[in-house]
Length: 352
Ligand code: ADP
Image 1 (spheres, rainbow, N blue to C red):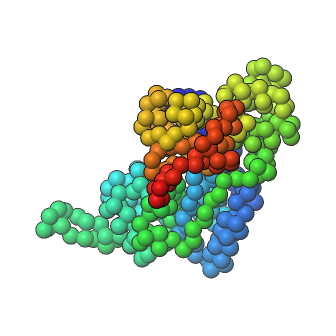
Image 2 (tube, rainbow, N blue to C red):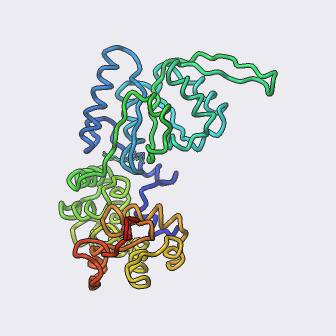
Image 3 (cartoon, helix red, strand yellow):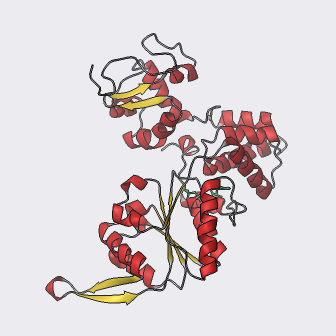
């Protein structure tokens, strides 16, 4: 993926996670927004503290970059217990999971990111561990294999998933509480930018903070990343302070527009409008037209374009909405209903 499209990708690599560590809120009080989830969590944790035990297992569901890892660390901190961090793809064999589970200390938090990507045998082992604090370790192979039961200390599993629909019902049922994380409101993003600027010791005007927040796709990870890039610009081309003009000029350099679309998003929309007259066009044709991988278009660009109401996925292919034409400054063609999508019978698979 090109580096400028990475700027608006809500995922993070290890290097980014290191830069993020300094900006993570450490308590529920410090955690901005997500009031519903925070209130619910507060109750779950408070009740567990009163009972003197580990809280129920917790599932955090929502798109990347919204604070699931941060919340899991806060859960451990609020309970005053250590946290172990791993992820579904890192657990390929049930034995990997058994090793982690058997080394947990009493009431420890086990954070399992991307829990929907765990292997099936590991997932089955997790059922018993969550319910009975016990696992059966299989020793040997074939007819001579024996199951040795292993007692575990009580622990709290905090699972995170970007795809809760992919979770099997038995796994989902074993969580006592599910927090659904939503994209952040503009006001919350402004608070996050200002808080991060304070921690990074960067001066920022209110209008500069609002400008960065409004282009960050409702996502704290992106807001923090844009802040770091705008800070670079401010230090090199200005006096280090982030004013509205500095924020605008910097974001123009990085090709992030007022709506938070980056070069890749605009390439997708541009091809859809200019080459295919707004669609419908198949995903792979669209990807080839802009020289990108199908996965990149589908997983990086499209979710945001769909959420913004600029693109629709239909059984006959991708289509641009009227808003897409307007956003790229092009005349909305007559076959598109005002404010809507092409007026063509059968487009959504309904009867023509
Ligand atoms: P996820 O695990 O959902 O991908 P993270 O917990 O890693 O997201 O959060 C990404 C970044 O955004 C972190 O640097 C974190 O500090 C910041 N962040 C997330 N949520 C908040 C919040 N509510 N308030 C302040 N910063 C946040």
